[in-house]
Length: 359
Image (cartoon, rainbow, N blue to C red):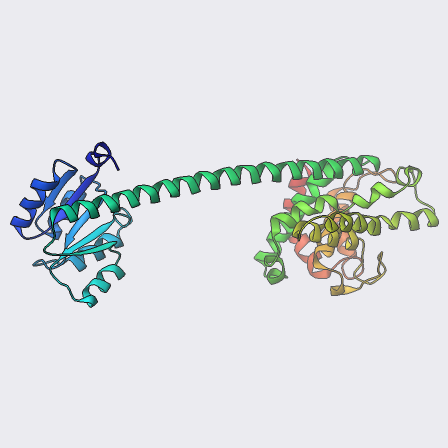
């Protein structure tokens, strides 16, 4: 470091020997912004007004010794990062190890030459400067990485939402379906955790990714023919069989994406939701006819919020039901179409569901 840089550095020397302080001051005051303290208590008084770049600390002092001083320094957030160099006549290895263990960065034994002291001070000031520069660089790099990560995440989210809305528009359903079902899912998940129902499993998920992945639950509809998907009435049996395949098509689409990416929880959640949200508790659902808890919890959650949103909004084949009528239908579906425990909690949070629906 240059003399000009050193002149801006503040050093405090703590020693009960006035001669040591005087000699040090005569040799160091022209090179640094230099302060002296004859005791630990005086050091802490100075620290209320001065923030040093380095403390030179004697070990053997009456009252508060150097070990007690450094212990207090390291216990306070304001002073914990100040580098401390011990100056002492104690030359036993145990004392040196103790000092270093307590946070000192160096241990200089007395007597020492002024030239040696200056060299050691300069070395530690330079190391501290480099450490701060490295920390600043790391923080800036981390900030840039976070910024780029957020940008990529936002882009991914926008693309996924756009794809999902395009699928819904083919089905004559507004894009609001996606946002509403995401809100319903988050509400239901929150109530389940609060009630300690399926909480252990839910808390093992990345809940934000799970909610976001629900955007793709109907992505398989992109593979369904328009004359079936947009039919303004009830589907014939063979048409309904074709419509059911959207769950399988969706899972295949997501697996194709997974094959070209690294391990991705988001896609795993999306695949689970896509293939299982039309399964029914009693085993009469599709595509695999799963029953009860064999249906993934993610699919059981998606099933109930998806049906609620379908009931409370117009569809090509029906007019919207009221909130109360929809609740009645869902309640009747407990144990047949839906997981009874989920229905119970859904009915508890129905006021919040209605509020979200009305936005």
